Amino acid sequence: MSQVELKGVSKRFGSVTGVEQLNLTIREGEFFTLLGPSGCGKTTTLRMIAGFHAPSQGRIRFDGKDVTEVPPQKRGTGMVFQNYALFPHMTVFENVAFGLQVRKIPKSERKERVEQALDLVRLGGYGDRRIAQLSGGQQQRVALARALVVRPRILLLDEPLSNLDARLRDEMRSEILSLATFSGDHHDLRHA
Image (cartoon, rainbow, N blue to C red; front, side, top):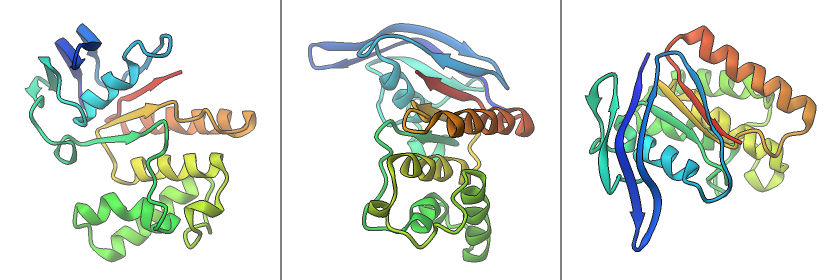
């Protein structure tokens, strides 16, 4: 449901430029992929769209509204990080429920939504497990479930399928595409 627009966006880290003068429009309902070599600014761009990095210059708009200064939790985005960013001291269920808890979703609804998200990523029944008990592919699916459970308007995926076996990668790619077309209000950004 959101069009994403970057106008003249740059990001500098001291004397190093991560992204320079990026102009980009991602239309509503579009599945968009950023491709490029390591270090070219793909992850930095995703983090700026999500609000985890502020651009050094330029503006970011969702549906024409400037969100450049809006904090991540108020942007309506979900992000799967390349390194998963899971909480090792929490169970799978607690990791997936975290965003719902922060948003003060009632406990009964949280439980139902977490179970649905875990089923979607083929981890039904894993809720009580600790993160350290999971394989890399399972951890990646927990991170995907955590991003999906908040029902984001914009879904940002930073190499979300890299640790999955070929069969599961194909299944999850199809699931992500069907989520985008089913809801009509998701943008999926991914880089290879």
